[in-house]
Length: 279
Ligand code: ASP
Figure (cartoon, protein in one colour):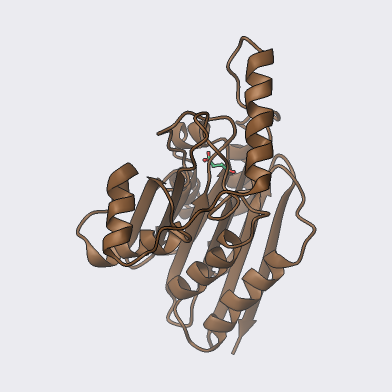
C-alpha cells in the first residue's frame, strides 16, 4: 500500500479565506494520485499561489524600500536535490527557476542579477509581478518608517507560500516562494530559499517555515526541528519547543511531513490545507 500526502500553506500572520489554497493543494494532490513525483506536486501547488496576487510570492510580492521587487524561492527533495534563487526580478514563477538551478547547473543557489540572467537563458520571459496591493503596502511601509525613528520589523505583510509532499515512491519534497517581509532593504535575503532555515528535506521528511526570516535563519529552524525529531522526540513537542523560543510578536510557523504524517504549528494564524490518501 502507498501513502501520498501534500500540505500547502499561505504564510503566517493572517487567516486566508479565499479558495486558491484549496485549488493549489488539490492540483498538487492530483499529481500525487496519478503516481507523479512529490517534486512536481509541490511545484504545481506553489506555482498556483505565486500566480495569485493575494499571496506574497511571484505576482503580488512585496516591494523593497527602493520600490523594486526581488523574490526568493527554493525546492528540495529527500533524494538530495536542492536548488534556490534569491533576489530574482521580473520572472513569473521563481520556484520553477529554482528547480532549473538544481537540474541544469552544478550550483545550489543563484542570486540577484545573476539569477535573473540565468532565468532568461533558461527561457523565462520578462514578467511584471507588481500589483496594486504591493504598491499600497509599499506606501504604508514608507509612511511607517517616516513616522518611527527606530527600525523594526513590521509584523504583517507576510503571506509567503510553501508546500511539502510525499509521493508513491516514498520521496519527500518541499518548495517555498516569497516576496520577503515589509519593510526590507534591496538585496535582503530571508530564510525562504535557505536550506536548513526556511526549507529542509532529509530521508524521513520535508519541512518549510514562514515568518520573520532573519530569526528563522539564526535558529536554522527547519533543520534543527528535523534533527530533534529524528533523534526520536515527539514531533509536536519538538515543534512547540522551537516555536515557543520566538516571542509572540515575531510571527513564525512551520509545516512538515515526517514519516508520512503532517505536523504544523505557528504563533499567529497560518492557513494550511492538507490532502492525503492510501491506495
Ligand atoms: N520568511 C519570509 C521572509 O523572511 C517571509 C514570510 O514567511 O512571509 O522573507
